[in-house]
Image (tube, rainbow, N blue to C red; front, side):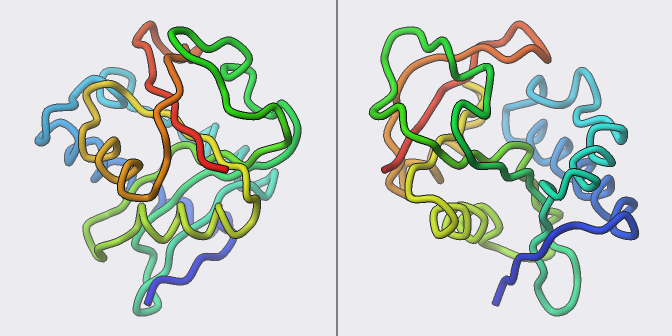
Length: 165
């Protein structure tokens, strides 16, 4: 069973290893650009996430098996203010996951993280790279609905936005 807890600074090395594994996994599954070209996410950002209490790890068998960023509130994601070729369902406060990754030690990391996030806040948004078909399939299975295209400051590639209320 996967449990979720806030990340600690002592988890940093394992978290960065998890992101390295995820970059390799994405490249092997047709998505080399989402994080691979920039070695995303940078360690400084993860340290900041941990300090802000917004980084979480997924634990199975007393080991870190995944990691993600979670926040919730009103208008918390600036990139979501403008959506193209669609619209958001609701403008109420929402929860958002970013930088979700597993390290291959457990199955169901994405499912566990999304279910946990939806328990925290009934209005949930997330985005993914157009080439990330694995994540798109997961989001659809989790009942999220395609809402349009957003743009992130990290690169010029559009992102596909999903929402669930």
